[in-house]
Amino acid sequence: MLRIVKYVLYDILQNRIVIGYTLFLLAVSLGLFNLSGDPTKGLVSLLNVVLIVTPLVSIVFATIHFYNAAEFIELLAAQPIRRSLIVWSTFFGLAVAMTLAVLIGIGIPVALYAPNATGLTLVIVAAALSVAFVSIALLAAVLTRDKAKGIGAALLLWFYFALLYDALVLFLMFSFADYPLEKAMLAFISLNPIDLARVVVLLQMDISALMGYTGALFREFLGTGWGIGFAVVVLLLWVFVPISVAVRVFRRKDL
Amino acid sequence: MLESTHLSKSFGKLKALDRLSIRMEAGQAVSLVGPNGSGKTTFLKCLLGLVIPDSGDLTLNGQTILGRWDYRQQIGYMPQIGRYPDNMRVGQVFDMVREIRRDTFHRLDDDLMRAFEVGKFAHKTMRTLSGGTRQKVNACLAFLFDPDVLVLDEPTAGLDPVASEILKEKVLAEKARGKLVLVTSHILSDLEELTTDVMYLIEGQLQFYQSIEQLKSRTGEDKLNRALAQVMKQNATNR
Image (cartoon, rainbow over all chains, first blue to last red; front, top):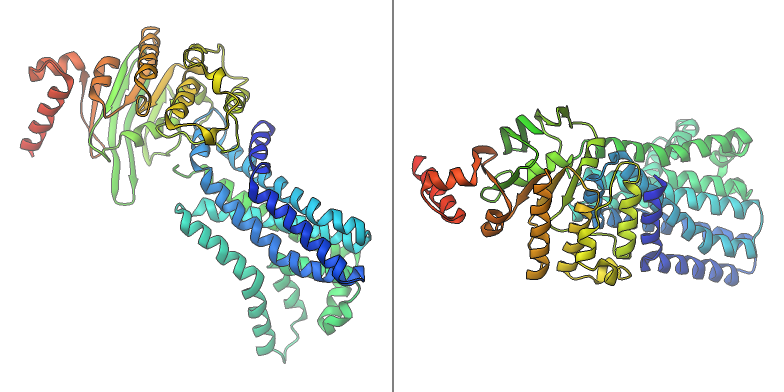
C-alpha cells in the first residue's frame, strides 16, 4: 500500500490549495496569539477557528480530490491490486496531508506561544478532527456518483456537524429542561466529532466551571483518565467507521 | 482463453449486457462493434473488473475473474481518456505502475516507450501534456508488462499519424505472438487492419461474432465498413 500512498501524497502535497491552507492556518494562529497577549486566551480563540475551519477544508478538499482522481482511480482499479487498497491509499494520502497542514499551521505557533498540555491537546484534536472529516468525505464521495451532488453532500454534512447539530441539541435541552439530560448529553456529544473535540480541549483548559452543571458532569466523566480515554476511542471511531464503510461500498461499486 | 457465459448487467432499467456468451482464443484480435450504448464498454469494464456483472460468469484461462484481482496481471489496458494526478511527472507514472506490478510481471516490454521517445518528455508533469502525448503514455503502460490480453479502447483517437502507425504495428506484432487483443474503435479502417474477428453488439445482445473474412463473403462486400453497413440495414429491416 505504501507504494501507492507515496505517489498520492506526492501529488497532494504539491497542490496549491494544501499549501495555501497551511499558510492560512499559520497566519491565523500567529495572528490570534499576537492579538491576545495571554496565550490561554489565544488558545480559546484558536480553538473556535480550528473547530470551524479544519473540518470544512478537510471534508471539501477530500471530496473534490476523490472526484478529480476518478479516472486515475479507474486506471488503478484496472491494475492487479485489491480495490480496498485504492481507497485506503487515498485515505492515508489525504489524512497525512491534512495532518501535516495542521502540524505546521497550528503546531508551530502553539509550540512557540503556548507549549503546554492544553496546546498539545488542541493540536492533536485538530489533527484527529481533520482525519475524521477526510474519512466522512470519502464515504460521501463513494456513495454519490455525481460530483456536484457529492460536494453538496460534503458541505451539508459540515453544516450539520458544525452548526445545525448544536442548535438541535440546544433545542432538545430547552424542550426537555425539566428532565435530567446529563447522561443523554454525553451521548449527544459523542455523536458529533466537533463537539467532542471542543469539550476535550475546554476540559483541558480547566474552564469547565463556565459550562455549568453539565460542564461539571463532563469534568467528572471526561476529565479523568477514563473520560479522556472514552473521548479518544469515540474520535477514533469517527475516523475508522466511515472509511471502513466506504471501503466496503467501493469494493462493489461500478466505476 | 476468455469465455463469457450469460453475462448480464443492468444500470437501472437499461440492460447494458443481456446474457452475453462468447469465447475468444489466444492469437485472436476481436473488434467490438455496435451503436453507442450497446454494451461494448460495459463488456470491457467487466473484463477489467471495473464493473461488477449482475449474473453470469467470465473466465480467463478457465478460472473465474469475478471477485478476483490477481488475474489483472495478465491484462494490459489502454483507456480512452487516461487522466493522472496533475502534479505527477511522466516518469513517476511509469515508476508507480512498475512498483504496483513489481511482483507480478515476468518481462518488461519497452518497445513502445523507445518508439515514442518517452524519455524526452519523462520530466514533464501530466498536466502539461497534450491529449495525444497522454495517449502515448496510456499505450506504453498497456504494453509495458507483456500481458496476455490487451484491451484497447479507441487506441488511435488523438494520436498523430506517425504514432498511430507505430501503435498499430505493435498491436499486430503482439497478436502474432499469440496475444488476445480486444479493440473498440469508431475508425473501421483501423479495425479492418488490426483485427481478425468482429463481435457485434446491439442493446447488450450479441448479434453476431465471426471473422472479418466470413463477414465479407456473407455480405459480398470487400470493405469492412460496407459489410457492416449492409448488416445494419438487414437488422433494421428484420425488425
